[in-house]
Image (tube, rainbow over all chains, first blue to last red):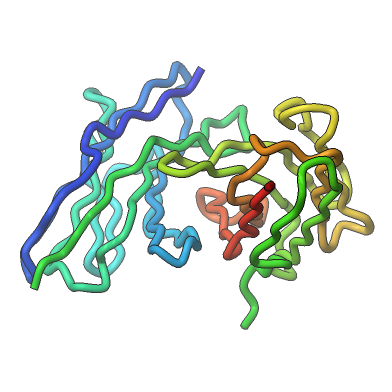
Length: 114
Length: 115
């Protein structure tokens, strides 16, 4: 069974600073994908970044990067140069090769302060 | 706008009534998913279609829940005899089978309130 753990229920970050959101996962499948989504107060889930289990390099998308540590089963999201619009809930999710659904963590609320 | 759309965005209904939600996926996407999200939690998978075939429905919360995707295009999620515990956000997502990690793109959701 898959399990996603996000241990930080809420975080505050100063505008223009970087923030790291923790995510650990548990799976016995050697082939899996890790995803991060952003959910603003409007409710829509916005896809941010994807990391495949066989990818050699950490994924990056603009100000988002994924710090993938496979041996530690960790997939932390780093947001650089935080902006006020980054204030939202962030979810880590996983899908393995046998599955189709995403399994989500409980989420981390990020609040960016001016 | 070619993203996933959902209608209605909000639905208030009385306990015992039936409700139906619609999802229009991104046009070239062949997979469609329904999730439910309650306050303060991550989305929870309900069911999934590949084209018009419903390949997984065991996660539907009870036999009051059903979903269809006629002709492999839009999908509907119906809840019969609604209960107060059905109050939640219902999210639809779509993906393309062979695209990268198969990342799913979500619609804005339908927020259901059962009074």
